Structures are given as C-alpha cells and as structure tokens.
Image 1 (cartoon, rainbow, N blue to C red):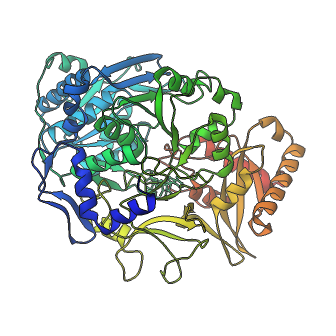
Image 2: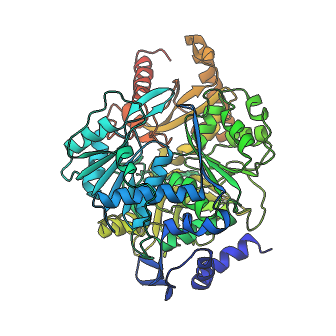
Image 3: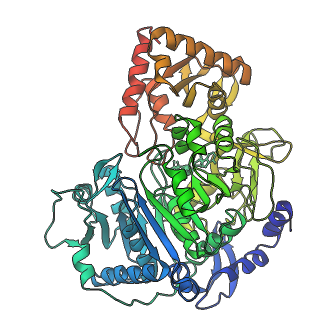
Length: 637
Ligand code: ATP
Ligand code: MG
C-alpha cells in the first residue's frame, strides 16, 4: 500500500503518467492521443482526441456482467413509493427517453434543461442527454421563476423536461406551473416542454403545441434503440449553476472524458465503493453532489445507487438508517445541514437499526463543526469523513482517502488535499505561502485535474477573470475559501473569504465563532455574521437555533442562554470572538443546498437590502431574523 503523501506527490509530479493510468478505468471508443494539453493556461484539456460517452460507461458497459443487478433504487417517503431498475431496465428506459428527445428535435450539442424532483425519470433524462451528446443543465426544483428564467436565457435550451410537481414534507411543490412562468419571463424559450405527470397537480396548465406528455410520447418509443454518440473527451457534457450563495450563479461547464475518469477514480480512492455495492447519497440531483454521487460515479463504478425523495426526519428520524439497514448501504453521503437537523432528535435514532454494512459516512457542502462531527461519529460508531469541494471541482478537493491509506480523522477537518490538486495556502498580504496554523486563502495551482470545470458556459472571459485573476501576477485558481493547516498537516476550512470579519483589527473567520457557539450543548446550529460597529469596525452577531425551544420561550430564558453562550465563546476563543448579541431563531436563512446566507443576515443586521434571495430555501427564515433584530432595537433579547 502506498501512502497518501506519495500518492499525492506522484499525481502532481507526473500528471500525465498518473491520469493516463487512471483513464484505463473507463471505456474509450477511440483512444486519446495526449493525456493533457495545457498550452493555453488556465484552460486544461484532458485526454485529447479520445472519444467516449458517459452513458455508455454508466450503463451499457455493465450489461454483460451485471445486467440483472439493481442500478437504481428510488425511495420516496413523500409519495410512499419504492422502485428499482436493473442495469438492463435502466438501459431500456434511457434509450426510450433518448428516442423521445430525438423525436423532439434534440441533437448533439443542444442544451436540455431538466427541472425535476428526485425521481427515476430525472435520472433517465440526464443519462439520455449524455447518450445522444446533448448538454444537460439540471436546475434544482423549487427555484423561483426568475432564477429559472435566467438559466434558460443563459443555456438557450432546445428542450425543457419537467414534472407536474414534487413533494416536500407531504406538501406538493408545483414544478410545471413554475416552468410556464419562467418561460414567460425568458427571451430564449425552448420549442418543447416534456412533462412527466405524477398526479401531484390536478390543475396543471398545458400549453398546446409546446407541451408534450411524457407517457404518451414514451408509448411511441417502446423498445427503442438509440446508439451512444461518441464525443471527443473535451466536448461539454453538462452545465450546472453554482448555488449562488455569494451572488450571481456561475454556469459551470464539465467535459466528458476527464469527468468520467475522475468519477471512476474517486469512487475507489475516496469513497471505497465498488461494483455490486450500494451507495446512498441523500443530495438532490440538482446539485453537483447529486450529479457526481447519485448518478455518474456510482453507475460508472457498477454500483447500486439509491435516490431519495424526502427529508431526513419523516416519517421519523430513523428513516435514513432504516434504508441503510434494508439496502445494505456501504457508502453514504450527506450534508452537515442534514446532520444538524437530525441532531435535534434523540441520538438513539442512530442506534436503532443494523448499520453493519455501512463503512463510511461522507459529508460536504458547509463547514462541519466539531461538536456535530463528534455527535454523528459517536452516534453511528462509524468513521464520518468531512470533505470539501465545490460545484466547480465536481469531486473532493480536501478529503480523507481511505481507499489509498487509512488516516485518523480529526473532528472539524476535511483532512488532506486530494490527489490531482496542487493546493496552496497563500497569505492575503503578499501571496506568499502560509506556514502551519496560519490562516490563508485556499488556492489551486492549475491545471485543474480531470473532472473539474472546463470553463463557464459561453463565457471563457468570466472563467479566467473570476477564478484565475485574483492573485496579482499569478495564474492561480481561487476557491474563495479561507483555510488553515495544522502542524500535523490537517486542513480546516474557516469559511468564505468574504465571511471574514475584522474586530478591532483582529481578523476572525465567522466559522471559528460559530464553532465556539456550537460547543454549547443546547445549540443545534448557528450563524455568525459581522455587523458594522463604530468603535471596533465590525462585531460578530450570532443567530442560533436551540435544540429545545422551551429554553428560549421566556425573556429570562433567552437572557440566561445568551449569557452562557457568550461564556462558552470566551472560553473557546477568547473575549475577542464574543458575539455582541446572540439571537434565537427557529430556522436560519439558507440556500436550497443548505448553505447559510450569511451575507443576507449581515445586510439585515446593518439595515441594508438583503440582496438577491432567489436561492433561499424558506423566506420565513428572514422574517425571523428581522423579528429578532426588531426585538433587539426595543431592548428585549
Ligand atoms: P456560489 O459560488 O454561487 O456563491 P456556492 O459556493 O455556495 O455558490 P457550491 O459550489 O455548491 O456553491 O459550494 C461550494 C462551497 O461550499 C465551498 O466553496 C465552501 O465554501 C463550502 N463547502 C463545501 N464543502 C465544505 C466543507 N466540507 N467544509 C467547509 N466548507 C465547505
Ligand atoms: Mg462558490
């Protein structure tokens, strides 16, 4: 066995040798002539001249050996349904949808916007695009019409695919109605809209001549055979917009060959998932995690992938662990935000089912605070791996790699740079390399490894300007995250570079303060933001969600808990990090991917406009912040 250190070093020093070898994991219709072409930095081209197809590698390739194995298991606790598809069945379904798309005039290079809930049909549609070489752009269901319209105008789709509706906490969420509204707002509407009816919107509007009923069209394409289109490795496979936590979302474009190779390699080295084994990724297909680890990586690896429609606590907080037991899940992937939801329930829920099949739980998307990391690790009795990545990278940048070497986990740390990433921590002051325990900006020396974004859709200039032009005089990829490496070489992400606050000349990452607040046993989660202060420049202000709301029902209770939290912060971080106030709310404003909208909170606290809120999960959360702040100005906590 090699060590992570050696493995990483080899991946950086001999990029072509390393990735040329990894490329053997997938089928190539035509072999590539060059592993890496990097003549026009920062644009990297991987496996140049090679021809392949993502759908072939995810589906067709497995038919001979595992045609009767389950490829996809759909579990919906929203509509109480479970369906599964073998690789052979998936192959048939995908070909049928591919034929349907072709009949609607979709061809190679055309964009298809998929706006659907977590359902098998969404997966068929995604793979059908890959099969015919159309570029899919999955948009997370539930975005406001204006957000969807902006994406339509950016991608200019030939087709949109949607459902009548989805369901959340048992309530229908209308998809098709919103598609209609967004099309009205857009300048480049698609010719056709393919609609899969689930019976969730009895009054679903239909636009004659444009809307096409999925089931009706599918009836005409039973048993269809549609060959895979062979694409040059660097042609676009999909566009995916970032979460939009920090402003206008960016249309991340991914390639074909590099993406397939990165997916296959990560499944072995990072996730330790192999053919015939089961993975359960709780994400939505609309996010990068869903693309990579519900669909592409598991299927390319020949695994059984569980796609889940529902929340972690319905019908009860044991629902996910029952799935792990019943389906013998080996690899599980979720987000800190979900674990914090579970943390509000009793820990005994984690111990109720037989989890002997589970090897690891992976978490990504937001900083995983130490108390939550410890809570879930102890509750499950399994290694819980925090790992850090971005929509832009498509797979982990910082992570433990148990498939390469078993390394001890440090709570609160996403461990080490993954192979392929030449990661650096640079001082903000002069861009020199930071030493141990020194806060710095996380950057990556390009070329970015296979699987990362190739550019921003239709906007090479913005790609270069946004990501590679922030460090003067150098071409480096900026993550816009703030990090630190301890003496043992473990990395910690301290939040986004624009989340750093300046208290009387001291620079503090809001995450550090959040971490300290979370140390109080009564707190489920919290957000800390910087608020302008005449004396100190900025002061941290905390908004916390308590595990037991009864604790903060009275003004006395709130005052007492606020005092305790301030003491906890003093003890953990020193008085410099102590929040000026701690407010208690029932929920935090988050994006639909579970990321806290710290910028909007701090704007409200400073009496400014909270900015673009189209990605917010629940607008009621902002009202809570406003109410809390209003109470404060009247003098009651
Ligand atoms: P936008 O770029 O449009 O503002 P976004 O950055 O929220 O949106 P994503 O690509 O979904 O969109 O999120 C990536 C970011 O999430 C990272 O840059 C980092 O800030 C945060 N993140 C992800 N995983 C972790 C982790 N394990 N620890 C800390 N932060 C994480
Ligand atoms: Mg980002």
